[in-house]
Amino acid sequence: MAGVRIEGLAKAYGDHRVHTGLDLEVVPGQCFTLLGPSGCGKTVLMRLIAGFEAVDAGRILIGERVVADGASGVHVPPDERGIGMVFQDYAVWPHMTVFDNVAYPLRIGRVAAAELAERTRAAVEQVGLAGLEARLPSQLSGGQQQRVALARALVSRPELLLLDEPLNNLDANLREEMRFEIKALQERLGITVLYVTHDQEIALAIADRMAVMDASGRPRQSGTPAELFDRPADDFVFRFLGIANFLEVRRVDGSLRLADGRTPWAGPAPDRPGDRLAVGFRPGDVVASRGGEGLPGVVRRASFLGAQVDYLVEVAGTTIRAAVDSGRAFREGRVLAEGEDCRLAFLGVQWFDAGVLDAGAA
Image (tube, rainbow, N blue to C red; front, side):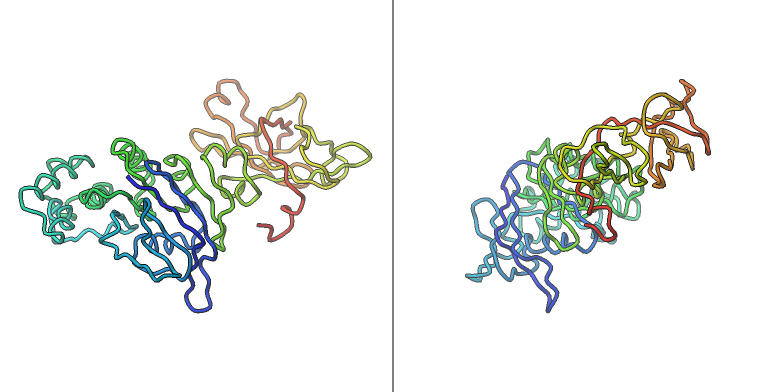
């Protein structure tokens, strides 16, 4: 296995700068997820690491080997970088069987027939396709085709596996199934994985460590999924990792009030100074009830979503979302109706400068 180190990476296409001074490190044997909005340069970064494109400046190291260096002109070809890659569109050949698709990199590498057959069968078995070697892609489900692409990437025994949004074309159930299979495979093989996606759920589910990039391609925060979710560095990370609610809180004559200047803030105290702040929280952090202590609100919409009941609640002129476990709510008779008054308590909040409330805040 090998890690990846990126130092001062720059890449531009004409006047369009995709990356400028990018630094990133992936620890050997870990699954590192790079999360960011569409167009932030995730796929470009993967292509630079894979060697499909040359860097303008900076260096890329796989293990201790420099595979790209803008200053010296070093550019190791893709087939000499010891990587496997799976693309969003699978890229399996429709006229080839599962066996031939998986064996293709070994045929190109002129591996002896006996070793080719053994390694191909082992790769097919690793991804759970044993017995399907003679089938064509048209005879496989989307998830099985994705497994073919994974097996083909693994058959060369790469030090590093690059996954570029490989689950986007699958339906919701298959995406959930495959994300856990990819994580289990990575742990079983001990291989280093760099996975890029804009899907927060996938990133949080499979990553040992992760980084969130903004629209300009700049990493805003890196760490474990729990660190980024529980302690976001800024409001961009907070917003990007799930549904985010914000309320304005002001200090008025020594007390904390909402933006209307009348409603007292009924939640955890701020952990930062300032007379105008923003408190952020997720729907699952809100406990909605009919009475008792808490922030007053009015239910404007109640939606049964199966596992959850999702509420839109108006609080001092601002609409927020709250979510409660539907089973528990039904059992305890705590399902609120549209138009009903309620009280809101908070399991946890994040405090930000009030600028995040302004239009266009990032």
